Image (tube, rainbow, N blue to C red; front, side, top):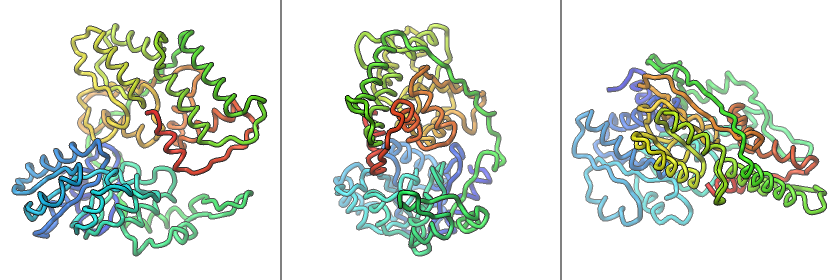
Amino acid sequence: MLWDYQAEGAQFLITRRGAILGDAVGLGKTRQAITAALWLKSSRRHILVICPKVLKRWWVDEIIRVMEENNVHGVSVREVSSVRDTPEIIAKEPAVRWVVGHYEQFNDRSRVRDWFKQQYWTVVIVDEVHNIAKRSQRTKGISSLSSDYRWGLTGTPIADRPADLWGLLHWIAPRSFTSKWAFLRMWFDVYVDQWGAWRVGELLNPIAFRKAIEPYLLVRRHEDVNIPMPEEPLVQRIPLEMPPKQQALYQRLEDSAVVELEGMDGEVYQVFITNAVARFTHLHRCASHPQEDGIESAKMLWFRDYLDNGGAPAVIMSRYNTTVDAIKVALQQSGRSDVDQFVVGTYAKLSHGHNLQHLHTLILWDSTYSRLEHEQAIGRVHRQGQRRRVHVIELECVGTVDRHMFNVIKRKEDHVFAVLRWLRKRCPGALIKYGDEKEVVQCLEADS
């Protein structure tokens, strides 16, 4: 059964060859897209879903669930993991079939990508489509697929700037949005900065811009749809003082980072942002949970106290696998009978596609580098059907980079701002070299 707004969303998709469904987290974008594909009249329907790898199984289950609710039978739903899953088996499948793949299969060296390109798809559905907003081999591979319909799903279609929308619009309607440069010059203040580099400034006419993209993009927030939603989450940031050994380790790492960035003579000439990001990540990890033996962390001390005092079962997310492992050990050692009710994992694994509304407490052990991922993490618990007020707990080690990270999320800034604020505080006067944005992203993702 669909809510009225979900039926409208499904209708929006099937009446357009290319469309972006940008509903907020928890409004059922997946269900709307599956329903739209089932409503298509074509007798031969080959539907390809491309999603993050951790969501493949969830997509398969949801497709089967929606088909059962609609009494649809005799349809194949297959998850493609390697090239062995593709040609011979799928060639014998029924006329209507679903195939679920993931982003990494569209990288330059993927053999599965070639098979995907050889097929003609009725519909290509890309989940978390904001991931292909910028040029990459993966984006190129997905754009090369042949299909009648192209539908993208995302909770934040304008992840950083309205200018980033061009990549999505070019994918769904390449004949209408042919030139990025023409698009930017038409809608934005494009200028040359003091160093001679082209920059994209403010949107010139927001009202006209919204009208121009309205046929391609449907965005609705919780307040736009007539459905009951739980009250806003109670967000509590808990400042924690690091114990002496953790404080000493953190200070040693920070001092070492500054020496490496400045040079032994203390003279700062230029600092590459990728180098600063790497040092920043080490500090963030130390504040999360030090890996050194014998060093107790402030957050783990707080968590043990939380367990001993009967704290409610919670969803706990961290950026780091090593931190997640330590949290699971602490849970097993706590002796509580409800340990199995806690859900613990990284942002990468838990912030997408999971419905965790049976719990009402979310502990953000550290901050993710992505504002979108932060919003999606909260959306796993604060969503339609939640009957209790959600309590979000943010753990912050005082005097560390934790403060910078949580603040950029609050201010809806880009993650690099956190690194820049720390760098300018510790290395004043540095000439910062930005380099390749792709390198910065790879550096931010390292060691997680």
